[in-house]
Image (cartoon, rainbow, N blue to C red; front, side, top):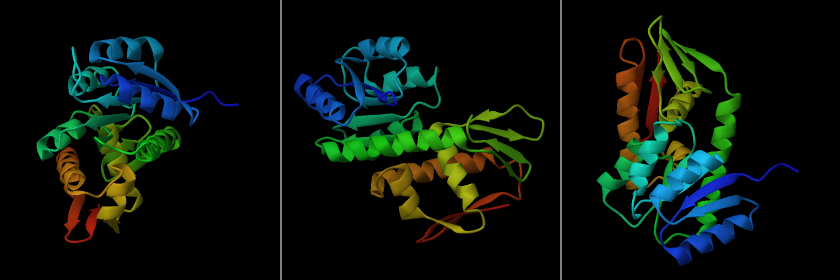
Length: 227
């Protein structure tokens, strides 16, 4: 029998944290529950979890700061934020600093479990994917590295790498906006759409050295990568 996926859960509401922990354990996950960001960071370094579920508002070290510290060590571990915040800039900030998904409180456990399974599946896909040629670039999807000719490679974030991977796989065809939002963000709501626009802009800047590569906005449908 395979070892259970180890999840680090950082949640300062004791009752909610215990409910989430017990619910995930009934689905055969191993859950490490921490009540503040500092303890969570120590647990991350000592226990090597495979996925993080982080509350944004926590004592000692908030979820965004914790994610930034972890991203300095690990660019690939999936991160889900739990947040009571609803401002667009807060959601976008969470994705920008390296979050892979978010859930607004209150949320259903079934939704959290689905999103966890989606992120684990993407992580497995990344490990088995190939190195891809794109114009004058080489894209190493498993390592999330984008290289231009002989220049030093650029390290992409987890979400940038997966978005670029799907754009390349659908090269010269329209990548449906709603489908990719649901696949990578878990929802196609306004906040996720704004976040994806930010990531598309970042990818355009990183690919600008090869002028033949374009990410076109097909209004009302999605995006199309051409080279």
